[in-house]
Every structure is written in structure tokens, then in C-alpha cells.
Length: 327
Image (cartoon, rainbow, N blue to C red; front, side):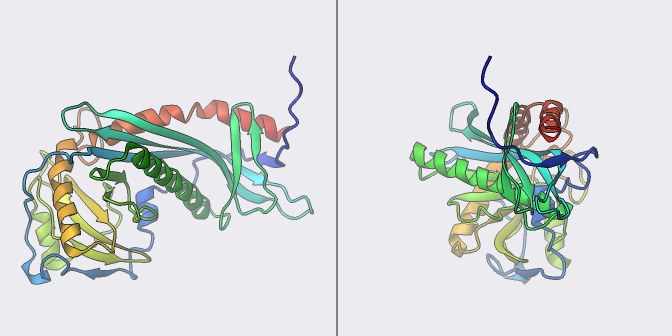
């Protein structure tokens, strides 16, 4: 028999409530929580506001370095309470897992899974939290700004973003390509410093365009995009809308929004927008395979399935956490 583990145990209590309760904010929602009264738009980045029209990009294939699609998934395994050794009130927290991955698409080759990284963390505002070591894995203690459901969810989302950034940066460095294109699923927040990168937002939590510009969006045909505009809420980014192939003629059917770094020159961001509008529609999901089609791109849908599998069995992880909590 092996020796008993001497690893320190965090003093936690596992809450019996559904771990997903009030913690299901998506990356898109978190990226647009401040999208109301604080929104500022510069509509004249590419074309004057009164000359907006649908733009059809020139046909283009994959860049020589290929296309990299990055995505991540997250899951809360348990809601917990972290004890205060000084006798104070326990602090709320979540024990959660996240996984990030990359799919690489190269000219003339099938798409391939390039990298996967899985992390497990205990998020809490408590200064007394310690890593939670279980037989199913170790949850690293990480500080959250507060104990509300939104603050804990935001801490988890930021951790996932950090994992995605690290994965993409390492992969690009090792591959040596400087002419690829990286598409990240969700808003670009926290990832705008990555070169040749487009944020892909498939779920709309706020309508940014109004009036004549909204009419241009509604007139888009598959493969067309709006002109680029600069959007500032609590953070700045270039953005544009594009429409994917879809049998529906509903105003927002097949519409996705893309984001790029705010410091890109006008010509560079217009070229990036053209490149995205020429490539992304060909990756559109199909409704008989994915209920989120066409916006949920085929590489993203496939990667999500792999990543959810890599997270492991939620029931086993919950039981492992309960075992530690019960001593």
C-alpha cells in the first residue's frame, strides 16, 4: 500500500445546490455587460457613415500559414464555501474546470486538432483558500474580486482567456508562421494584443447599429459584411458584421460580429475584415448537425465536443470534491 497523502487540504464545504445555478454567463454576455449607456461608436473608420453599404470581399483562400481556430469551454463542478480559520464567515467560491484548444486548417489538408490545455481552479475572494487536492485532480486556488455569481463567473472566464492566449502564443511561436490567421470564439477582450487575430461573436446580446447603418446590416447577403467601425464600451475594438449562408431570410439570420484590435491602421483592419468575410462563411455550421448553425462554425463545434470530453466526468469530480470536504 502507498503512503497516505500529506498534501494540505483546503477547509471547504461543498454546497448541495446545482453548481450551474446563477453561473451560466457566457463569454459573449460577459463581454457585453457594459454595452448600454457607455457605448460609443465611430462609424467612419472605413467609409463615411452616410455612405455605408454592404461590402463584398474579393475571393480569397486560406492564408499561406493556414487558419487557427481557438475556443474554450468551462464548467462549474461545485459551489463551495471556504472556511475562515479566524472564526469569520465562510466565503463563497466555485470549483471549476476549463479547457482551451486549437484547430489548425491548412490549404489542401484536413483540419487537425493542434493543442489542448485543461485547468482546474478554486475561485473565491477568501484570502485563506488553498489548493484543493483530490484523487480526480487538483483545483488551484485563485483569487476572485468578489463572491457574487457574476464575479466568480468572470474570474473563471478570465482564467479561460489566459489559457487560450497562452496556448495560441506558444503554438504560434513553435510553428514559426507569421502569415496565419487566428480566429478566437467570442469577444476579443483580453486577446486584442495577439497579432492577426479576429474575435468571432456568434450570439448577440446588444444591438450596436441603428438607423441607416442597421438597414445596411439587414441588407447583407451571405458572404457580405458591413464597413468597419470602432466601438468603445469599457474597452475599445474595431468591429464589423458579416452574414453566413442560411436558408432563412430573418433580419438577423446567419449574422455574426467580428472584432479586431483598436490600434490597427485603417487599411490593415479593412484587409482583416475582408479576409474574415471571405473565409468564415465557408466554415458555417449546418443545421442537421448543430442547432446553433450557421453561426457556430464547423471547427468550433468539433473542438467544443473534444474539449467537453477532456473536462472529464462532472459527477466524478463532484464526488471527489465532496470526499475532500468531508475529510
